[in-house]
Image (tube, rainbow, N blue to C red; front, side, top):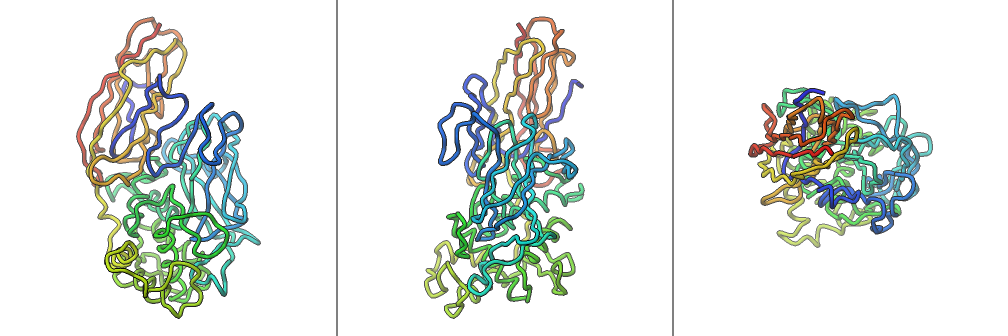
Amino acid sequence: MTDLMLKKLTPLLLVACMLAACNGDFDQRQDEATTKGAGSTSVGTLPNQGGPRYIRGVVSNAGAVSGAYVTLRRINNDASIDFTTNLGNGVTFSNGIYQIYLTDLSYRGPILVEVRGGAGVLGANPATALSDKFQDFRADHVMYGVVPLYDGYSVIDVNVSPLTTVAVGRCLSFNGGVAGVLGGIGTGMYGLMCQQVAEFFGIDGIRAQLPSDYSASGSFGSNDLYARVLAALSQVAKDIGVANVFDFCLGMYDDALDDGELNGSIPVVPNTPIAMPDLGASGLIGSALLNNYMDPANLERQAGGDNTGIVTGDSVDTLITTLDSARDIDNAVRTYDLTVRVPSDLTVAKGDETATYIEALDQLGNSINFHPYGDSGGPSFVEFAWVSSSPGNVSVQQYGRVTVNAAAPSGTYTLTLTIQPAAGQTYVTGPTQVHTINVHVP
């Protein structure tokens, strides 16, 4: 282990779990997937963690995706996806819920949730909810979500939709020429991409949010504006002549994967001869929602009301205005206060390893809807650099794990942590901070 280990994280409030108070819970902050540690009281239907570990969420296009094949994919240290093995697999229920048990409980880091179609797999289309509510989610169709950090405990609310899929495509698109970073499934990278996608579509968040069921399909969800966006996109697909909405969803992913933007840079919607539209163009998505989906004469609409009920300045009116404006997803640039809570002293026995949980982040200032994590294993926008006073005896592994050599002499060692925005990137600004942690080896 070298005496300098770069630990790359995403923006904002770095939340470190103080070891004495940590009891296994990982503080994922607002709008994050929820975790609970051993012995904790349950939240909703999340049981105490005495048994197998799992990842759970809902796959939705403002309506259930039923019978889809869900695979949990490992993320390599360079933030690439390991498609050769998996951490667990299963299928979605008729209401879109999946719950996949992990087969390797020793894994730590981000997890890609891959959702693929196949024979007999069906997904809801809110734009044709009366005549063609469920459409084929075929083997070539895919959706993605990400568990930003699996740290040994079950995680719920890892929801998957066409918009989380776009965020993954955007993560993978970076080649160093945009924002000064290379792409991949880094926890911090995914958090920022999710916020940028949410902002692009005029909503607060997409990751732990769940759209309402606009297809009358039996799906769970209560986020009305999220559902309206998905209904509007489904309506755009219908309006331009795309017969299967999941071809259009795949087109959005391919478009984001191509250059990071939803600008129609791919020539056609997959499996069709129809040109892929620029979803940032003015007068497209908002008009499809207002004038077509919410048309009082639209008999396909199962939810959302018609356009005669819109009140000037209300949330739906604001959403339509945003969606009808010209937008560029690259314009979502943020300034952060990096407020760090780290333990000033640790006691670690010889040959042992202790997790500091220096991972989770939250934004300070005007917006509290930004929800990325820190990431020490992949690309991101903030660098975490560790220097050990004796790297041969005390070192830092990925995800803030402090390791003490079994042959280390007893005594006190220091770790110096420097945090600053990554050089060359263009999305995040913030202060440089330096912190010292004393590691006592008995």
